[in-house]
Amino acid sequence: MESGKRVTPQLMLAVGAAVIGSLQFGYNTGVINAPQKIIEAFLNETWYERYQDPIQQSTLTTLWSISVAIFSVGGIFGSFSVGLFVNRFGRRNSMLMANVLAFLSAALMGFSKMSSSWEMLIIGRFVVGLYSGLSTGFVPMYVGEVAPTALRGALGTLHQLGIVIGILMAQVFGLGSIMGNASLWPFLLGFTFIPALLQCILLPFCPESPRFLLINRNEESKAKNVLKKLRGNTDVSADMQEMKEESRQMMREKKVTIIELFRSPLYRQPILIAIILQLSQQLSGINAVFYYSTHIFEKAGVEQPVYATIGAGVVNTAFTVVSLFVVERAGRRSLHLLGLLGMAGSAILMTIAVALLEKLKWMSYVSIVAIFSFVAFFEIGPGPIPWFIVAELFSQGPRPSAFAVAGFFNWTANFIVGMCFQYVQDACGPYVFVIFTVLLLIFFVFTYFKVPETRGRTFDEISAGFRQSTAGGVEKHSPEELNSLGADSQL
Image (cartoon, one colour):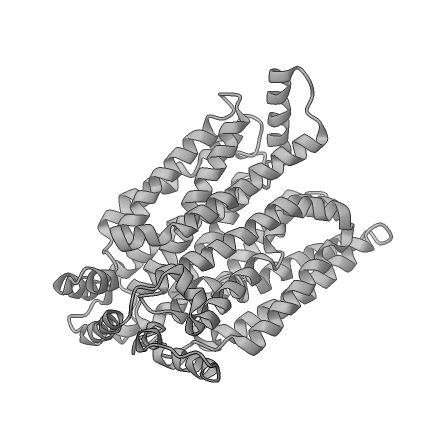
């Protein structure tokens, strides 16, 4: 196998250790779902112990919603801080340092019951959100920079695979017979300690990003040695030439701040694409399914809703593996379009099934099929693609700022869905997914007309397309700006 497509043990160790951060993000997204009633009972008991008065239903709903959504608030702050770490400490060391937050959150959530403190539970959810927000920036960036050109899309999808395996683990561990019960739920939430410990053991054996070593630190010999290990080949001249060209481009370009991404007409289109793709992931309704799937299945009349939720997790994981193999063949844009359209169809089917449930009991099975297909189409496109397409739209210079902005919008949308879905569902009843259907169709139209195909194209080819689209404008671009979108490096 040619070195450009060879998966070496060192490469797999590096990618595998990194995506433990993705697994943590997925686990903490899904873990709060199954033990909802048990944690609500804990909130009620703690409230009664303190105030000798049962908690009001509205207060309980608010506390529960905060426990779910505060995770996303942490994620917003974490994602916006990515650039502060990666350029100063490096990609690998940043991932290593972030585990302090994982250990702290595990302690806060794990001891919340013993301390009779729902505040500890909420603060723990915020801290693990902070960790997850950092991970959603660190992991795709590191994986994209250690992966060979021909495998960048496939290995980039492993970030999403880590997330969905984490969600599935949370669903299985959340079973009443395992840890989703009144005595063991603090261990369920504090489980993040174990993956964090594993990552701390593995990361010191992984190399730093060769792009960071050469471009940011100017350590050419170190970068070359790292590449030889990652590629399993002594001849890494093509990779080195690509990175040197990008380094030369960076020297000609000024440092790109977040404000400049929006101010310059040249960056405006790619950053808009990055933002809309992130929103298409979160506002598709997928997190409504992940956060409240057990509740949705209960409403749909399913007798064992928790097992149906786990079934959705299995479908989730299986179709992420499918995406892993087709993303380099079918292309990013076409898979994203297929996923959005399939999700819209599934959302319509789900709405019909839930609306007719009172009249036709067998519609409960149709709702399960609809949710399974909704999840499957999500993992074909809107799940994995928005995470790594940011790296493909921007070169090394604007990339950290672009990741921070994209992550901020992703987590903000995540927060809005987590905080509002239960209230919107109460107001809209079975028609709640009509809102997501409309949004999905809007995202489909935007992707069809505005998103370029990036598979197999160089940064220069992508940036040339953006230059042409802004050439009709009256504003002039400096040579630095024109260079900032990319170097002559293969994607």
